[in-house]
Length: 267
Image (tube, rainbow, N blue to C red; front, side, top):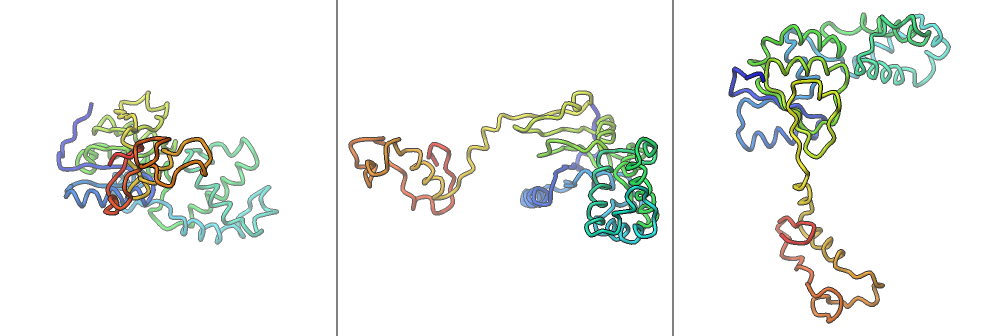
């Protein structure tokens, strides 16, 4: 297994703004200096260095809007000026790029692929300098893997169930230079990870039971304590009743301070 040469440098890869903000907040509270929190795309950009950057959605849509009227698109010419074409083309290109499909190499296979390949070529010529497709970012990052220990340190993939095919070669190659761990938790693990040297960390998810806070936890327990009979047969105060469950519901006021309650009502 690769060993990081920079013990103070760590990188966590998460998906989504909310997850990344939560991890950054937690890192700030714990004063975890040297910890970086990225999406995988940001990790690739950081490793590729220079003035490389991903293709932003706004820049992509502007480029498509500019090139569609003047670019021959074959069988798509009849619909290229219709409303919704810009959004559809942007979504299609994003999906193609994430999938790692080489449109230029496969344009001969189908007229639709040829049309999309023409659009892609025109869009790339229109995009600002430095903006790269995921596959191009991964290729640029692969050329700088020797710098991964200093730039990234150890890498953890957290809370992600799958990774786009365009990023997988970079992740697999990264494991030969720095320690890489896929923190799956209770989530399923992609099958392709078995062919890599990436450490997979699993857990049974027992900790996920302590999720209900405050009075809501007590209400959940009281609901569980109700018998299967109709509500009319249930006494107003279960703690004083002689039938049903003898264990009383906990006092809701006792949990107004936000303490936790487990599934069976214990704080």
